[in-house]
Image 1 (cartoon, rainbow, N blue to C red):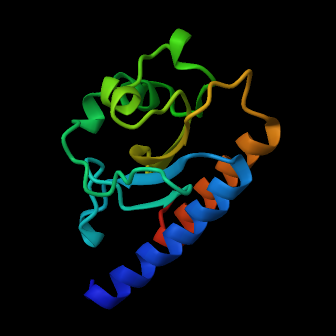
Image 2: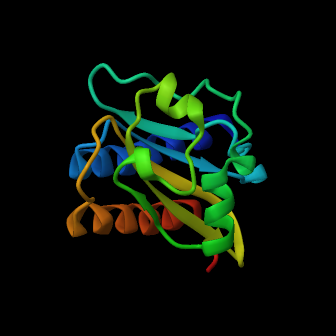
Length: 155
């Protein structure tokens, strides 16, 4: 894939994440996905949308994402992981997400392709929540479908 097409795709994916961030009031939304054709790998976020003052994760590659308990849970369950408060969260999120990035709650949405967990969209909140709303969950589900469409992923 040529660089300009890849850059345009990343920009479109960033637009999907920005809509999701706006719909959820999140600190940050990110896409992590393994797609060699695009040179995308889950250990580096492909795209993100940030609230004012939020730290970017685009250059953060120190965490083995697939080894994280949350990613392993997604691999097993293949459904949304909704964590309104990390104090009681199981599976435990990566400690760096809390300590370095101030995340206190999250939703993770799996992106599957041909029966394989290709990656996920993350919605990070700096606030503990009583719950994530149905509208916020629906916004994540919509972002997953839009991302799958943009990437041309088979079911």
